[in-house]
Amino acid sequence: MALSSDLMGLGVNPLQAARTATGGTGPLTITPAGTSFATSTKIGCTQFLVTSTGAAGACLGLPAIGGDNGALIADDYIINNQGTATLQVFASTSVLISVNGTISSRVSMTTHTTMTLYPTTAVLATGTANWVGTLGN
Amino acid sequence: MPLASDLIGLGAGSPLLAARTAIGGTGPLTITPAGTTLAAGTKIGATQFLVTVQASVCVTGAQALVLPSINNGDGGAWLADDYIINNQGTTSIFVFTNVTGVGISCQGSNNSKQILAPHATMTLYPVQATAGGSTTANWIGTVGN
Image 1: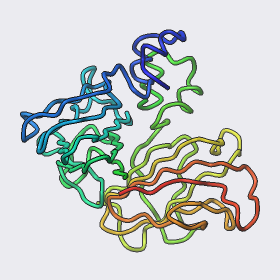
Image 2: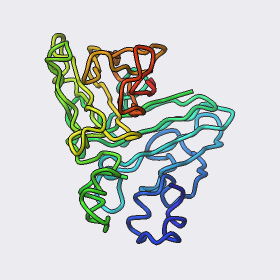
Image 3: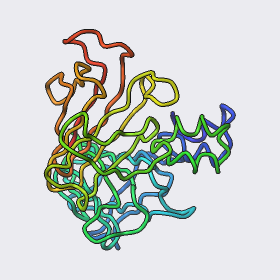
């Protein structure tokens, strides 16, 4: 289901289009930065499909969960790494991601892999992931 | 495409449409497995499209989830619905079809039971309303790490 602008052209209202388009509002390309969540490039709350061409060690940060400027529960975020180096994807402090056989606040994505993530809990509990997903080749 | 309640708030045409088009469906997003067999397993709701088994409820002996029946009206999965199942526990969980003999084509096999390791996620789609024999799967899908 395309970008929100496409859905709007098909008659869907802007808010609904932004949340239901597979690509959200875009942009679909993103440039990672930094070495931690704090210094990373943040993925927008309706930037549901992104592909990165970043440099070695560069990072992306997931949105916070909740509110108009955050991810909504069960949103789906698709992240691809088409760079020549491993990409680091961070959740915010103390927020965990259940993916790739482990639970951690950081996930490494090798070149030409894609990860799909879903926020499942709005309130953090010790040892429980807020994000779940899958990392494929 | 969050929960049905979010889509309704954003102006989705109807609650029924929202329930069937939201990635998370109607929720709830957490689920507690039970037993180790089809008969004892916890049934995934027809519009419970995204579920995670949290570590606190995932223990040996309480590991089974059961997929909805297919094309069973409002109470069943529709063809091409997508169901996403995550396991946050330290123990593998079992995902069963609702009837023995109905298969899931996934992880290199066609079986009525598939195993989901810790911190792995499975996405499944019903593709046939009627079991097509022992070699034809009703569900297809993928398990990623």
